[in-house]
Image (cartoon, rainbow, N blue to C red; front, side, top):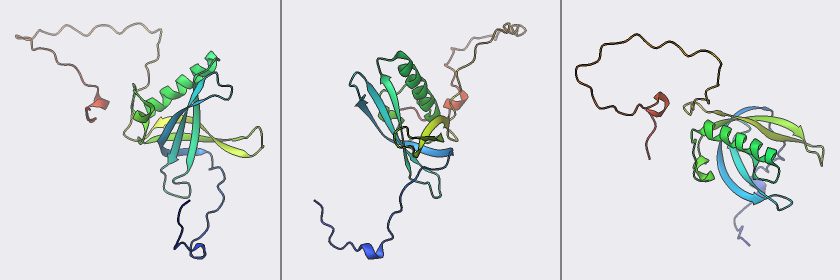
Length: 178
């Protein structure tokens, strides 16, 4: 139990019922994540809780997604891995050690609407993920069947060769190294 001494509901506007938010793109972050067992107990899913950051009537709303990372259905696992890859790329963390590494980093979520199979009510579903401004991670290069470009014309070699330093990708130059 908790003491509520001093609270007066007559001076506080009551909270209205939450319905689904309109379909669209929202700035959000992952606030929580947890591995949970599947209904049949044969696998586990990673549940992410997203919180919308947009100013306006839908700021602070919570949405969830479940990724079947351990499932007897290999297709379900592959779908979950692709979705996790999209989340990682959107927040700029390509090799997380823990799901908490993805928390509190802004990303854009694409929210859609669908009917709940059991109740028939409209519910939200996260349908995609994109980088928020400043979190640009380049997409995986697509393989093409184009011939390789010709080598550049030969340049004169420098008189004294300097030791090579590793190149830093342009999008990583502004990031702090942990």
